[in-house]
Image (cartoon, rainbow, N blue to C red; front, side, top):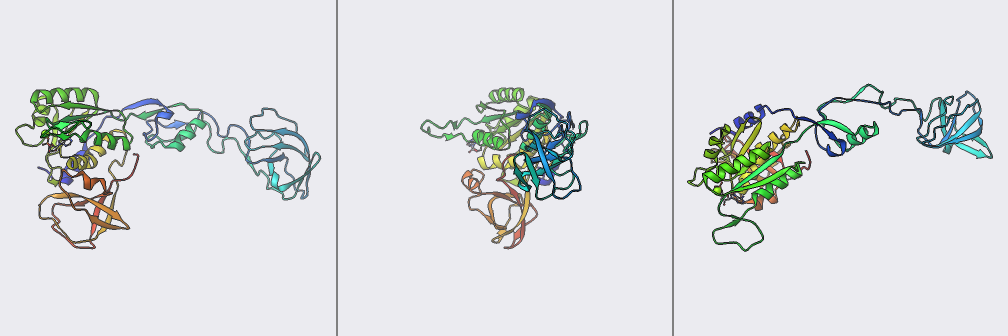
Length: 396
Ligand code: AMP
Ligand code: MG
């Protein structure tokens, strides 16, 4: 049995393959950029008006009267031979005539017939976006490792880029074990319970952006468990197994993993809930055997499995965010184990919820943090600072 710190150390030390793949930009939200991006064009690509107004050749004169000789709208490709004291009526985004160096905004102009009388003189060069003002062709404009957001995708689209190399997120297989498990939708048979871990894990994965998820089932026999592992490893880059990893006579997962030559990195952590967690790998595929009790499974998922999944996706800070908060009442930890307690954090006040048993999702569903109490901390007094793992963020 290892400590929480050791287990996290082993997860963090696990090296993961770099899986780079070109992808259409609309599929890359939340993913990590797998290459440096060089601008294929200048942005803006031509001298662009930043305002609706009049383009002209700037001069020292104060009250300039401009003679308006043409109109340029966004998208127009004409040019014109402009002379001093002439102007072109221009609109935002339009190409500024070559000779013009300044755009006066229309709010600073009075117009009469074909004349524009400047009532507030702009500075020389005002409202003209120079070529390459935002980015210059050939410059590295985005670095490998960046997490792509909607602004990144918009920026790439603006550069005319339709595909980029990204770190391909892993596919996840979920293998559910347990003879007692029944799907929701039929009256509950005697001795059975409704199966809930697979949908819970699938939704947790969905929340963090993982959609390539497939669920497999196995009855509690060695043969079925081995078959399930084989199928799960074939589909997934990561296999999450639910249940069957304890020491009962009908827990076959450990033996099946060994016989499938999945190499163990650790088994059993001195923690509550989630003590029987098993973690290992076969070649470049990773396996977490999560305890079947729903609250244990979810705790192990958040603390150990999700960070590895995010690491495979190229995310540099893959753990859920932590924060310190003041506990609202005394607490004793006589278990000798590290605890992950379902709790609520509001206005920096941490309240540990009633109902911490590993089967209790009820408490989990109304908590927004897991309070972490290390194994060597026995007494906690009201007002002490406690580390909390934040549960309610969306996305990667
Ligand atoms: P196990 O880890 O297989 O010994 O299961 C521990 C407890 O969790 C048992 O009470 C199981 O019935 C329950 N359990 C296991 N798998 C699931 C599941 N997929 N959904 C809901 N409860 C489960
Ligand atoms: Mg079981």
